[in-house]
Amino acid sequence: MTDQPPVASRESRAQVRQMLLIGAVASALGIALALLIDWFPVPASAQAGPIDTLWDVLLIASVPVFVLVETIVLYCAIKFRMRPGEELKDGPPIHGNTKLEIIWTAIPAILLVGLCTYAYVVLTDIEEAPATEPLNVRVVGEQFTWNFFYQGENGDEISSPQLYLPVDRPVYFTVQSKDVIHDFWVPNLRMKIDAVPGIDTHLRVTPDRIGEYPVVCAELCGLGHSTMRQSAHVVPRDEFDAKLAELARGPARGGGEGGEEETDGRTLFTDAAQPQTCDSCHTLADAGATGTTGPNLDDTLTDLSEEQIRQSIVDPDAEVTEGFAPGLMPRYGDSLSEEQVDALVDYLMEVKGG
Ligand code: CUA
Image (cartoon, rainbow, N blue to C red; front, side, top):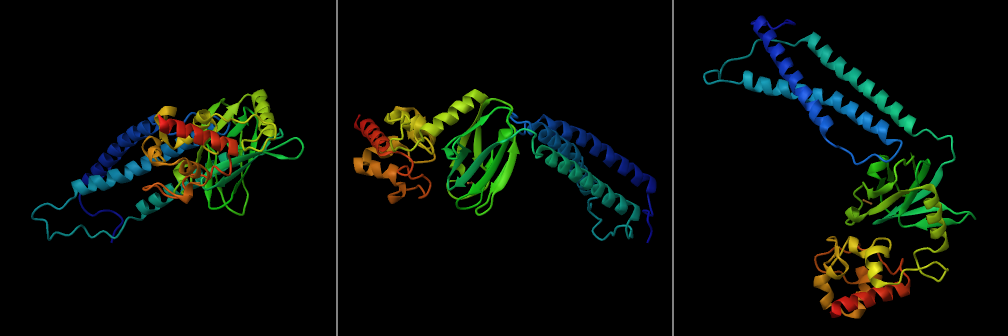
């Protein structure tokens, strides 16, 4: 019953020094490796800088903890393993080491409090309301698509199947869900929040880099979860205003409201069908499409009648191709006009014919 190992104290001190040395070298290598890895895509918001720095600090703090613990475990397993003939030997009668226990409780506690404080400061800092009036965007998730709503001039909401954001203007997102929990995430903007049915969640972000970035769902929400991907377009302000005006003038769905509507089957297939273009999920050689989420149309089209093709677009769950789950494909009868569906059917019949 003593605080110190009773025997071979000089030898054990040397062993501790050896362990710490190995641990220090391995930590340095581990930190270098961790910082070398490109963890995140190109940063595209004012919030990205502080978040990436926080991430690096977390790596620098946590890699040595992991490496040191592993070093001690491996070192002891190798150095003090039982050798032949030692089966009946017992270890020295040590009760514990109070000093050591205080140290290994205190250091992690201090580390945790420090890192939590730092993370809290960063989070409150980047979520602080900006001095300028933010752009309000309502994001609505549903199985399996996102819809974005902007405030129009006359109080109407303008809806868009893709996210458009003006560069360098703070955005205040209100995130909602129509069915189950989704998670609104644009990795390049770094910020991410759950879309929970029945409540509004919020997110502030200031995009500061022009480009096109993926919008993804980061919460397993059903069979089509992995297809719940759209685009965030960060554009110059004048381009954003023009886009909003265009969306206000002619919504994607038909109805003769004066907007120009895409009625070329092939263009619809690859560029214009909403909520997602057909080529994002289907393969069709004629359209240069290589999607693999849904049936390969080069194979399945030949067996389908015109009526079946129409039904597959308008109400896909009425008859699902073997091997594919129902509920994966949106009902395009809800989002495309009759003329657009006709155009798609004509185009697919044409491809099928020859
Ligand atoms: Cu929505 Cu996953």
